[in-house]
Image (cartoon, rainbow, N blue to C red; front, side, top):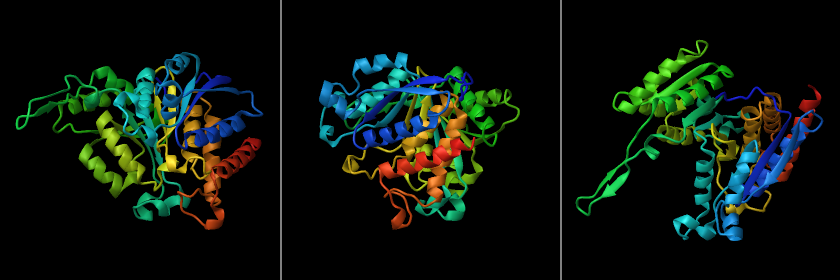
Length: 371
């Protein structure tokens, strides 16, 4: 599967799942930006909305109603806001908002997670690392999402104190490694043409298979440079010299850990988009949570969701020109000093959710007018 479709559909249907907390505000912002991007072009978007999370539990008793799942067959992509509500923190596992998120991912069977980690120059001071370390960082973490130790069987726990025992199984099949490796190499072809594959091949036989298969897949991409790195060294290198990385290819568990470590390079989780692709339709969502304490106050940072929408344009619809225009519009407003409360900057340039969205749309329209 290519990370970028070439069919260039002229119309698309997007299912919006705003969810809980600040989710409705940031999804509404991204919808406005997407619509502004296609206005005046030969491309059209249709939006429909569904329930997920705590709001779905309140209205239907199900954190992801089956009627929402049925819509996946009739849309091109799903844009998710956030899931989580303190109201349900003490509820049984099957009655928690997060159960809807797990059901969503299982229903879509999206096996490739893409998480861009980009340090925007105006926000360098927000990082906990020195400016000279993080300036210019632009990494794409490509994580296998549906196999490995999180899903391997048997997975058991037995015994009573003092003889308790637990077993997790790490398992990878050759085809699972091949398909995620192809995603990484194809993404690298549109970037700096470098892939670093992370494993623990000095200890784990699954990693030995991983390294072997990734090396074989690399032969189909002679324009891309492949380097292998042990996971402990990769974790160290991410904080020592993160600029050395272009595309970081990882197993499920290693990617879970390293993508969160890499996210901290940026200084703000509110800036980070993500995509989960490979299944029925692509799932796009910001990395941040529902932040219910910020809901309805016009203070949430919409840029992670806006950039997730840009990924949707690029990886599902093949609208790379519009995706790039959105990304550049975000750069424009940041370079001008606009920032939400979670970002550093001058007090007189601090804006709310709606105002930040207005600024992005303004600069997006300016850029599109020049093309």
